[in-house]
Image: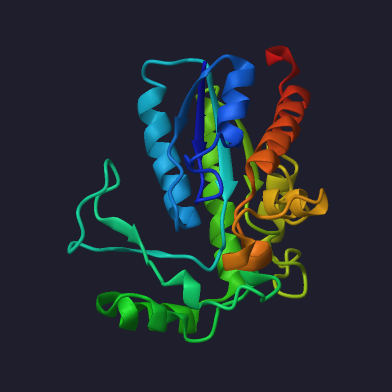
Length: 251
């Protein structure tokens, strides 16, 4: 059995076991963890699809753990940086996170003022214009569209999956109208999927905080800091229970 995990820094390999490690150990499976700090959702989905397409050529027992990140993150093809494994010159737009006011609530819905100034000079103008045009409604629409295509591909290849938000809840109806004609049917289909943990109602970050787990780097990032070792272990138990409920024949 192969457990394939992809995410931003919340689920990437760390100095301690993360939820993917615990999940794989429980299943007595091999873990392939391709999480990467500062990833946007487009990278997480694209890399997962490409990797799984290769893995499925030789493996038949595969589970995908896909953790979503901030919708206000993006990337750029940057030829001044080395190519990254099998993802070419796609690179996240890196910023100096120490300059951000991490006390902002609902950061997943928010574009931090002048955040482009914290990026390297060669991408600053692009990032500024991208941020000026950013709006959560088309961002969520594109995200759900990509996820429906990914889950459809997974089903056609008999790949089981759990999809969830890592960092925060997706924007609510005050910001994104999920009942609008361009989004409603996509959201309904996505939420009806038993392999999806509703990202409007649940995230790893909020789950850990609600249980009293303090982010291990809260001194740097406040409530948006990264979950502790204990929080990862607890969250893995939640994922295992959800997996067994969703795929009982594979329990």
